[in-house]
Length: 147
Image 1 (tube, rainbow, N blue to C red):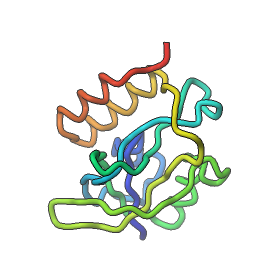
Image 2: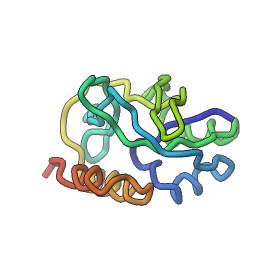
Image 3: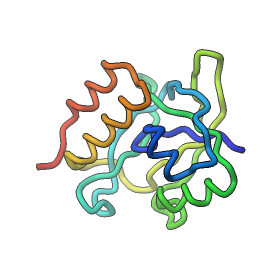
Image 4: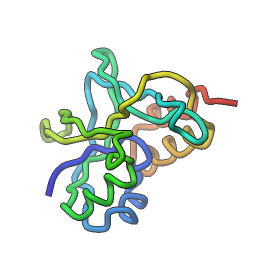
């Protein structure tokens, strides 16, 4: 098993359970020094895609999953890591019990552009399903989106 930090749609435990049935939720926490943003507008079918960038003043809520080897291959397909659109990077997650070294998917494209309203709704709903703090979920819902 390997630890994976979900920050977008895979925050939702039900969605991860469908995609990766052998990869249970381990914990939740925060990526300190990272910010949720969007990029790769030319690659998305309805706007920019979610990603992470380093930012010393920000933090991102994440769900950490114990991912099995088979589920990792499946997840790479879902996240387009098998095509090179996203790449895996190691990050540290701060949890109530300490820090964990995990991997997360980061978009391999330029930052910029706006996500669709559907993407914003999906991110906020997934964060709520993962029991993210209400102010974090509210901030996601207030993010600008493409018309």
